Image (cartoon, rainbow, N blue to C red):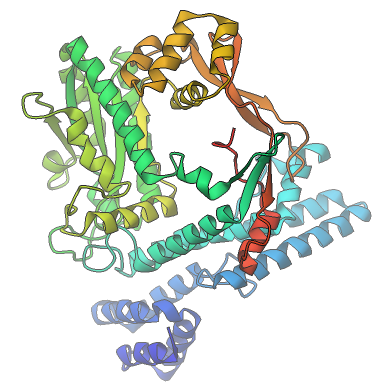
Length: 551
């Protein structure tokens, strides 16, 4: 965006208010060039409807939102990444010097208070729940983070993601006529971030004690970080649950829960701004759903109803999340379960227009018309990579829409898929790892259990149905699961001086260790790998990426 955009923004708002108003607008438009045209259109709409004073107030509020907290220090939510890195380096260095100066003078608590205030003034959360009550030993890892440029850079980037996207929603730039699901700017930010992450992985390699070397990007592509692998695993688990339900004579129901009208920024029919919208962002709407789901779970438990299946979260065109749930239930429990869901889905604003018809819907899975797994397949695909979907609900190419949906989920930290019931997916993955290992036979012989061998064999075959049944069925008690992830404390500490745990295998029947990760790995830069300054900084300063798939 150039100065010409600022000039155009000023032309759009010409004639509203005084000369001072024009100067005020010019300052804000220049501060946020890349969205100045949207700011101008928003200003114009408000000025026409409510007058230039209200428009000025709204513009000032948006400008204040786009500053980095109370301290500001020249950094805006719209600042480029180079500025963020420089800010992070300066802030970490300044706070470290301040704290050690205060501590040396015998004013430890004063230095700590200043550090806490500086973090909170930038709208970040100090990395300790009760710092003033903690001992000096307990607080040191938190201070190590506050003195670390990486910690500041990650925090500011996350703030930029959410605050910028919230402003784009307010400006009417997230809807099916502008940027569907997420703003164009937000999607581009995520694409750039994913590209940076990929470049960092490509520039790193893992080496073990045998001298075996693997590039981390190649490793990631073989894991569930690969979108096709993620989709395939989800479908395998879904099909396994369905097979169990059919054997048990259970019924499948597909539920959709939609948020109250006040959470939607734009109307679906005509894409106009929703007059009932309360300004909530997608993360806040997701918190509402989580709260209602907690109530539903508690009531189901009291009623001794144990559904199992999957939940999918996806955005409406304006970024407001809604939930889909494919659940399996005993036939005699379906009516009561649906009554519980409906009650809590309509607990808030349940009498508003259209609520009874739209806020909670049910579709019964008819095996004569298709499988439950087949029914949910399009919902899984369109939220991962869009493969074999064609067009989404709004007529957009599903592959491109999937990119926007993943950007939306990443921005708002929304978990798109959640398994309800069943065994641990980590135990499933570790079992598959062991099955493909040269050490599998020795590990299984050392325990000599038919159950363990059956679990490993089922995982190796991709048989989620059998793996689930051997694990205690689709609704097991967590404590009774035969296989659970086994974590141990790593030797040494991380760069913040804290002990860290690592996954080394499985705990069988709460007593026997089944090692699935047999090597010690070290991450190092790839020799002579060409990287930008930002990538070099990330490679040199960040914690080593998890060696989840190198073991």
